[in-house]
Image (tube, rainbow, N blue to C red; front, side):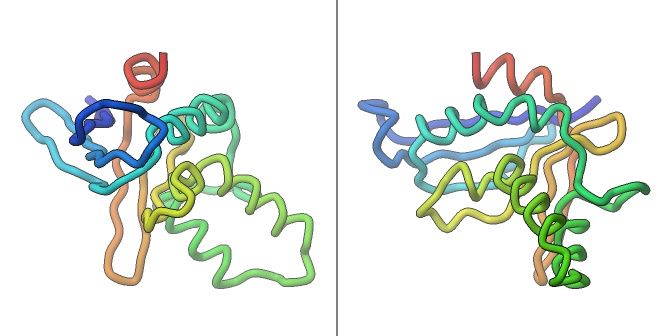
Length: 149
């Protein structure tokens, strides 16, 4: 069974347009934990997810032709080993990040680079930093059914 992602509003709901304190929770059976706790513009966050649903579901990583540890780790390694003369590949990676990284859904917020996307036959949420990394397989249909529609 895969993890499910939920946005939990912690502030009183007056308007989604202003910054609201949220928890992004992952859960599976009795296992439940937060991957982000902070203020975001919930309307913009959800609109970004709706606008990028097709990319999240169907677009693969650029220049990717083998199994990977995680999307976040692959992107980290891409920028570590980048050929600065390959502008088209750099642009493709930026476009991928813009439609798969929650940081782009919460502009102006100190949001970690959490990626969501297709990984082989599954979907994942992943993070890679110098302090640590994680990767969780998620139920993408549940996400777009319960959070966005």
